[in-house]
Length: 353
Ligand SMILES: NC(=O)c1ccc[n+]([C@@H]2O[C@H](COP(=O)([O-])OP(=O)(O)OC[C@H]3O[C@@H](n4cnc5c(N)ncnc54)[C@H](O)[C@@H]3O)[C@@H](O)[C@H]2O)c1
Image 1 (cartoon, rainbow, N blue to C red):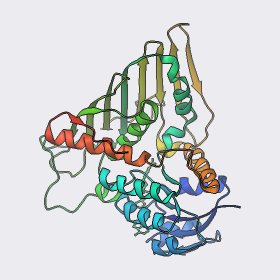
Image 2 (image 1 turned 90 degrees about the vertical axis):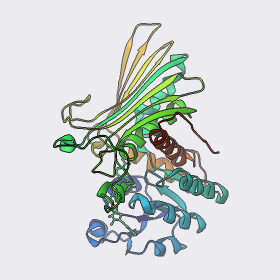
Image 3 (image 1 turned 180 degrees about the vertical axis):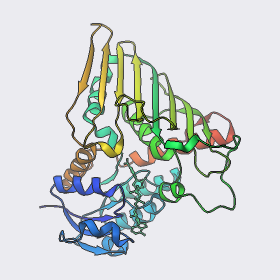
Image 4 (image 1 turned 30 degrees about the horizontal axis):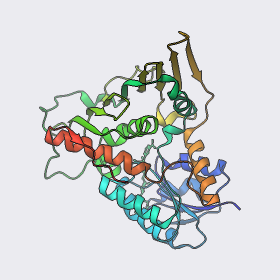
């Protein structure tokens, strides 16, 4: 039987969820948003329309909810959905801090409901091939992770001197009220997820975070992360002023480069909003053979692949596609980076679970 889904939040990201749900042959029973203009595209598809997400969560005919609202609402909606026994697919970041994310994922674990935080980049075929090839690298000695995203004229004009912290009196910026922060939670979280997917949990880190004095969000975060067995990871997330860099020359310059005793893997991921036209690339340099192999795949949206796997799990009542605690793990690294940047100290990541 087709699973019945309520989609809560129909803004910019929602079209990818609708696409994935359609391809997975799920039935969209509800669409929910405060703004009629954002639900308009899906009116007439047979789904009920509401502005009240509680109506969706309370419907016994709903098997699963997609939570794609602004990030600050994720916690409340996820907890209510879990309490109602619904499976959940939640957009990233899961919540706005690691404690809240832990509360959500542990409630989902206790309830036994399928629960997914939708970090879709691990669903690129190239990322999954990187994971398969990792053992051939032997001992991993170095990893570089970079997400440079084209943020236009962010850096032009007179930026004030380096000064951490938001202005006390100002209302939150659009980025903070929608996404919970700047570069770290927006682009930076995705490459943290890819790093965790490929290498597992780091143990300690040291981070720097640049928040201009007139803003309440960051433009640049850099960090060094230590792993128990896989060497040091250097990490950078940057709101880049450049528009023609990157492997597709579109300003999107995002990659993970892992070097081991047996070779090197370089995973290059494309602009998230263009995954129906652009795909990831994986380069494998094999030390023994001296060969370089480039893995190029046809366009196959990682959103569709992720949602397809999540829906299959939800239909089967299982949790195999991805751990329930994925969203917590990313938020824990983010929290530790922020703690390190604020204190100026190296931080032991206080992992839970
Ligand atoms: N995976 C990715 O690459 C990616 C990319 C962009 C955004 N996101 C995530 O998706 C989420 C949404 O981001 P977006 O860019 O679509 O933002 P958006 O502002 O375009 O959409 C958010 C929607 O939530 C709606 N909303 C707000 N309060 C609501 C409420 N009480 N009930 C119902 N709807 C409500 C808004 O009206 C809006 O339509 C965020 O958590 C963001 O971090 C993920």
